[in-house]
Amino acid sequence: MNTNQNEKVRCLIIGSGPAGYTAAIYASRANLSPVLYEGIQPGGQLTTTTEVENFPGYPEGVTGPVLMEDLRKQAERFGTDIRVGIVTQTDLSEAPYKVTIDGEKIIEAEAIIIATGATAKYLGLADEQKYAGMGVSACATCDGFFYRKKVVAVVGGGDTACEEALYLSSLASKVYLIVRKPYLRASKVMQERVLNNPKIVVLFEHNTVGLFGENGVEGAHLVKRIGEPDEENVDIAIDGFFLAIGHKPNSDVFRPWIDTDEIGYIKTIPGTPKTKVPGVFAAGDVADPHYRQAITAAGSGCAAAIEVERYLSEIGK
Ligand code: NDP
Image 1 (cartoon, rainbow, N blue to C red):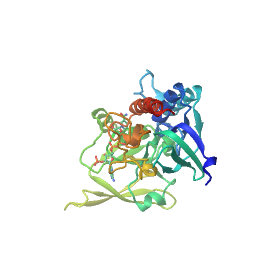
Image 2: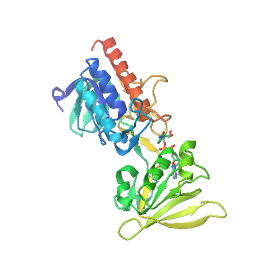
Image 3: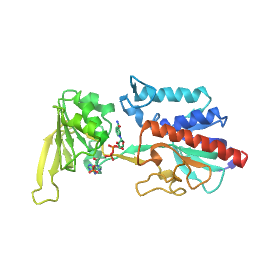
Image 4: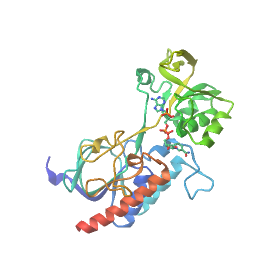
């Protein structure tokens, strides 16, 4: 590859969720001429949610897609160069750092903000693949519409699972919530809403071991109290199977160069978005195992852009 063909940028932002767009707003207002690559899911995870009620500044709430469109417009207004593309390889061994887009184009960046977010996890059952797009989904708000007046199951016991179960209960005739522990991990308010919803049946201490159906999901094989002496096989008839068991941070492409924890969350210097590579910063869910909120992601994107500005001025770029 002839390096003369590489495009040089001062500030490269990877990801288009609240962290990426907020970083872009700050970086463009600081005249850093940021280039932002949207990644696999333009707008990030919020584009798959309905109502966002906890983002400050929207007293009546806002839908996820509208919020992300607003953030995008704000970044564009100040001149961010927003592009379609996915990072397929990185070389962070020395500055300027080399980032390959879509396996072809190489960007040489003086500073990078990694804001690649996290992706929904699956149980790892072969049947999840078999029935992909035929009754298996990791996004109730994307696919719930197809299950009006039908029976669905949601797997998980956290806030996401409760939120998805509640959302689906407004469409489906019945919602099973399959929880592997004898309790929900979700916040008290969400637990109460779920437990008081007549359409939601919570199956505590149940694990899913398979799905069945001729031309799509028709049911799930569950095991109650798996591994215990009173273990019991339970089959439920369902039309849709929704995963809500957490997320995996999208950090693999950076792993050779920066530290992550055992799950893959990028490790930053505590209280800062700095990774161990000078000029490479991480913001949003990819580096946040604790809060994972749109507003905390936006805040860390802001901090990362401010750090880029300081870094570039220190190195005279
Ligand atoms: P969490 O990690 O909080 O919960 C994951 C859930 O999935 C747990 O109940 C876990 O069970 C279960 N689980 C994980 N792996 C498996 C498996 N292999 N089989 C069966 N069950 C499994 O993830 P969430 O996505 O729910 O939430 C992430 C963060 O986002 C949290 O901090 C949450 O509070 C926040 N959030 C906030 C919202 C809001 O405020 N409106 C909405 C959504 C999320 P176990 O408990 O046994 O580990």
